[in-house]
Image (cartoon, rainbow, N blue to C red; front, side):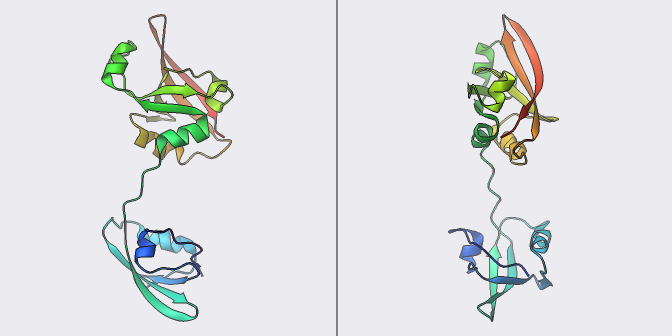
Length: 178
């Protein structure tokens, strides 16, 4: 039976009166025997919808209602720094034109840790990250959602645009995530 181990302040659970130590019994009158059942019950639910849950607190049955929030987007720049050793920023059209990459979309690499995973692969400041795996990367939100799934040691396929002596290069490689 799933026990609540922590409740984040100002979270939907905290607002609904859920406390650490509560034991989850049911959600919308459907029994919850293992923790994964909670997540399965949330499939298809949307922000703003309320879910009624049955808990046991110190041996006493308790009912609570949790109003769902939107899932916060992962921070793409923070994850790029933590997992790949780079800092990135959105590539504006002005910057793309200045770099000779007019019309390019992606994220410009603003710094590279020399001994970090991306630095070891050879990424440079001013490279443009345009893809991770088979997915185009147009903004920090896209990057965050992709890197959120990466674990230390995973190989992360990347596609980079680089301008070298007025020649546009499209480079592909794999970064070992940390």
